[in-house]
Image (tube, rainbow, N blue to C red):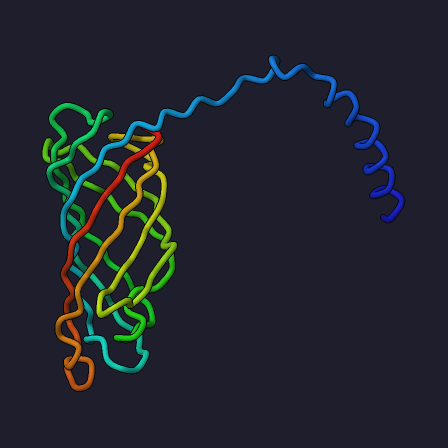
Length: 182
């Protein structure tokens, strides 16, 4: 087995000068259009059981909404969307938003959809606010191929709910949705 690895490495080394000799103009350059569409809105998340001051497994469900969509790349007539989501993970009032990934379907005001494959890149509890940042690609539907960044800020105004049953059962806040590379 060791000999075949060395043989493959030697063959690869022999090919490198040939690959390096290909003129740069022979490789098509990827063009990226940094046109953006921005929607502002809200995010409401429900927790069952309610979040407490200790970690526990919770089911989450809620609604995302984007309104007043504007930008150079905006598709005419697409002004707002809604999306429902669900989740199941370990959380607490100290760490209510977990890193992860998922898929969400945005339903636009004209009944068309965008399928978003996201992953959570930042989740913090800062200055009494829950802050979540989600990034990913629109894989199907309107704006397919675009990147989408969603930042949610939910003021945690009921901190005392974390210390007794039923716990913090809902958070609501603002959301900003930015579509790029359209």
